[in-house]
Length: 412
Image (tube, rainbow, N blue to C red; front, side, top):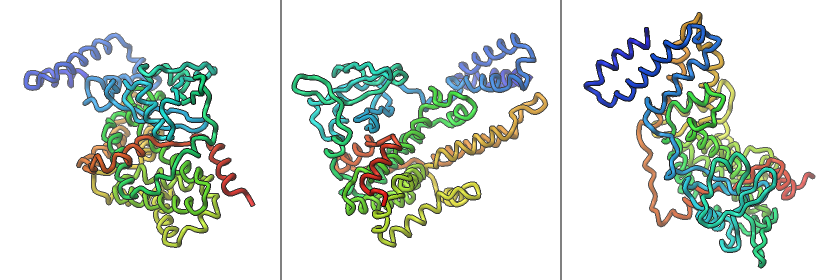
């Protein structure tokens, strides 16, 4: 009866709003399916399947924030060594040559000396030709992309584990911290602004949360993890104590700027990166950090304190005016907590109180985007910054990070 009532209302409005015609057809399909199903199929035993079916009509009911097309950009991991990769923000239609150009510039190698190779998990290697499409779903499922070095005989060889780090310069030390934080905000805002509110619902209700319905949300979560690894990677690849101290101070300032710019996603990621076990154990480095920086970092850390259900963060975030970017893992945790702590059906009836609580939490996205972020920079002056932030170099193995940590500051 509920569906029929909505259907009749849509039918009345379709003449005034012709755009509802597609929705009308969907309702007709639903009502047709409803007649074919038995009452038992909509009982609590089938509740997840039945409820999720309603969400699956997203394609017609929602504004299209999130489907990936050939012109849209995604993250592409290009491995330099077994445990380190460059995260390349690239269009789905990018060729191998375009990807290779970005990576060669990042690791400061001549492009003509390198080759892009698809390596399957079984160990098979396939060199991608310049005009080959570099990004494909089958590759993601079956293996990953590597950069290999060509020798004089055009034989492909993997780069040595430390070769790329010796080639890298400490460019970040010469970058303006406010501008770097602003570019992080630009990047994160682009991802955050693309997330559709129902992506949070799909992520929570569906066990396939990393599927096509949560593309943008998954990208922002992935970015948060990469920023955390980037902080640890930059610090641990710096073998000189003096420069390492400068780097830690630099990241503390960047974290403070991220907070000031209301980018709590990158703020949390940087603070967590500095608190990574492989970084926090560097006693010689932390001893040389000036007192005012230690005090600033302690204040920033207090915002990430999880006690009282992250009260410090929630109070601070509530006071911030939009536009702002929340710490997405915590927002997802809130939605998941509501979902798992409350039954979707009570006595064969939909628990609307639960759904209202989820809706209120999800509306946080809408509030954060009330105003649009306008942090544009001069393209010429900040092109290097943009390229640096768009293509982070990270080591994704905790074991490799710990080995680097013990190499630069051995256990006494």
